[in-house]
Image (cartoon, rainbow, N blue to C red):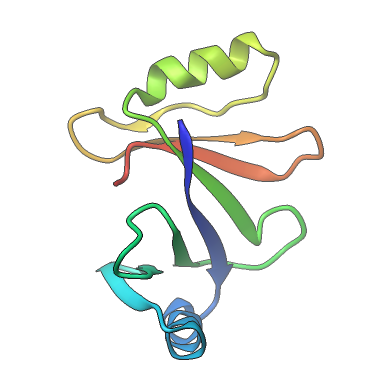
Length: 113
């Protein structure tokens, strides 16, 4: 498992994505509904994603870790005593699961490439 992207929740994800593209020379890699994924063209694992949502402490930024087997990774984390939510989606398409770190900050494990 590796850190794949950081999600920043924003009321205007497209505006924030455009700012980071302009300021740091990134490009839009994909757009799915209110989810905008950006990053440098030469680095498939260094991404910032902007998702429509509200900003509040502990939920404005979410670290996302890639895993080919989200369900197995969820079980491993739960065995370590880490609070995890339910697996959403399915392994054949988009699959993810949210958890909380020791201070209550959100993180996610996902098979999203």
